[in-house]
Image 1: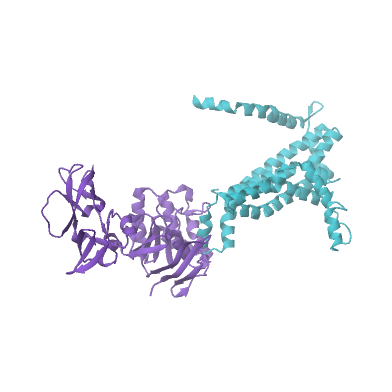
Image 2: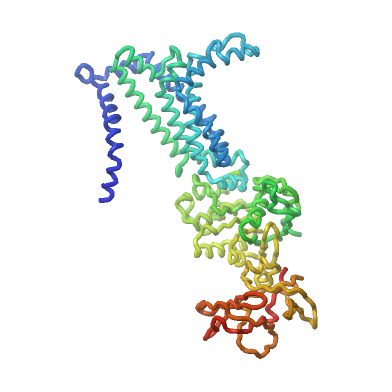
Length: 273
Length: 353
């Protein structure tokens, strides 16, 4: 009796999500199989056989993957350092890490345009000290997107990892050392495997975030399309809602596949995590 | 020669000394415990020996070699943590094998040695379990097995039983003692539990404010504490601060004001040159008889509190020299306010610093 009463607490959330998320998603997916009133998979065939579309998908996956790996490599040591600090310093550093999340991604992308452009801060500095003779082409390339996305998502992975690392008993490192492990080996055999849950969640957030990000690739990618900007172009500019829905469905599928394999990886790396 | 020596070691945090000019010698094959209230420096001493802490001054010698700057992972000491510190992502087998694999021992031998040590701690058959799936006592035994399997030159315990319930604690300490004696491994054991230390140790070092106040076998400490701190710690509640200590006719004369006491010479009066007399509540007697009894010092007083303890009565007797607590078995108790004589047996007097 009591339990059924408690379920009622879920009702507002469930109603909201059903109305504004589940139903629209189901409708979107369903609509991809119908065109002019009859069943079709034409949209998918068109997408999967067109070299241009496939190239966009490949670039998107590539950008997301590199962003994720870079975030892990940069974020992991930083998170470990922060997790070792006293509460005061930890608070300050975490606030600093989260700070980029507080500015709009439009503002941040414009800043990167100023930095990375042909006559931008980076190029003029490098030219001035004579490291290069002509400006580097960074802005409006996948590299620029990656830089913007890494900047965008680094806080996420740091926060997730700090949360996990804080809960690792510091005695475990001492135990490993007393058993003969150097500091580096102890880190590798204890901290890394025990951080796997945070690493997986963080990576999923970054990967899916990069996959679906719109503003950053739109502003920093120039003519270079990724799935999300391509979707927008089809829906708004070309008014091709059918193809846009197909792209949306493909994005959902990719997301689920990624989460599925990441979870598999997590169980493999840390069976009792 | 001692196996392990700490020579004039100092440890400080933020310019506050935890240990200063600290000295300790440990003989091979012994189990020595460091006992004391929290903040006395016992854990600091243990962590220093383990290598988790570095001495500010002084030397740490082990088997005649200077170990002061030898890093933790090169010391080959087994450490058992209060929190057990088992690796949660590894099975029992892999936890125990951790140290062996770091030593690049081939997998066949790893298997034999892990299996053997798990038998020693009575955990055969638990190899595939994970720490989460074990009880507290089992986890502790895995932790001990993990420390033992590397054949350490020294075994260190940091309050290993304080997370276990009372029954298990007694079983485990018997077990620890058995394993330690079976393998003949020199062990340093830290605890704040008196009974635990006294029951398993060859030697007990009682520490207070960064200093070892007494290092002796458990029975000697229990009967003949050297300082007031130790006396209080092990249950002496009655103290008289005498002004004068003299020797006469093979006995010790003690005086404060008009009160003259005598104490017989025994290890308890010889081990210290102090003038403070310590008595256990069980060693004092209360009587209403006025006749003098041989071998007793007497002191007049009034019963202030009388408490029934089941087997005995506990009295607090008020005297010119302060309040005294006495436990006495008797049929009909003395009432509050009664005038009584307190008797101090000469041979039960212990003198402390």
